[in-house]
Length: 135
Length: 135
DNA sequence: CAGAATCCCATACGATACTG
DNA sequence: CAGTATCGTATGGGATTCTG
Image 1 (cartoon, chains in turn red, blue, orange, cyan):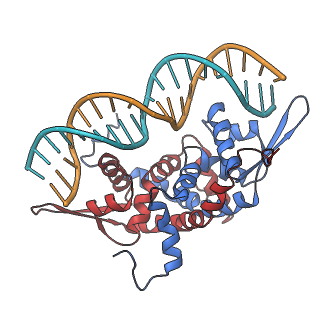
Image 2 (image 1 turned 135 degrees about the vertical axis):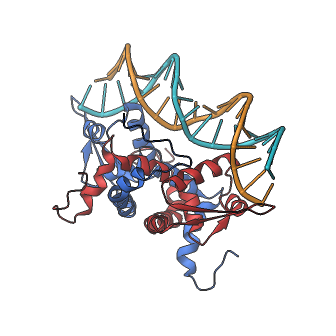
Image 3 (image 1 turned 30 degrees about the horizontal axis):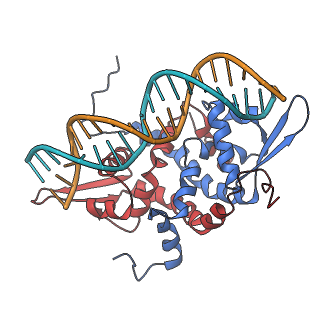
């Protein structure tokens, strides 16, 4: 079907699947890379967390987007939702095995970005070469 | 508690930077994980490509978004733009050294998604799932 | 506390037309 | 060929309010 098993174990073939418009991987990628998807997943990497805790950790997220992102990620099987029928309610979110696998691929990315973001933003030269420096 | 004693402090801290609202890494992450950012970067992994070729490979992208995404990524220093002053124009885009580093962190992610997307989407149980209308 | 529902706006995005 | 400019729409997403 989509992943020819007989091909070389080259990572490229599976990676380029996402370039195809009709491929399911496009959808999953969109879910994960949605504005808050990565942040929620990365936050959960440090263990199960409650709603209020996630909301605090993913700085700036609104309740609406937290709920929406959590539901999408849960629908994809990345996140497990544990609602305890008590008053007041307590709901814990955690990574599923699948989610944990995903996050393992996410961490190198966000870590690298975290380490290089300063340089990248600092050198914001919105031009091919240095924009005419000092002229 | 946010500082688990038994973990590797370096890796965790850089990864969680992105959770902070004011952190530059948030901006870079948004650029990279923008709707078309990942696709452009992954596409360029297989070597320098012309405008028209990128447009063809990133299926579904509009000219506007191709231009916009390329400029943002170029501004971040991930992509190099080589415009040849000939008629008709020929412009080649390629990854910079920085961009290549980034893509190395992107490939495991998109590869993994490419390999698991079918399962993920297939089992899409979004709450009270609608009965599959095979008709 | 953990959400759902509603309102509403900003902008991301696509389609088209135009240009050097 | 490789864009830019303009326009219109869809949707993302924040603020607020309400509920069990």
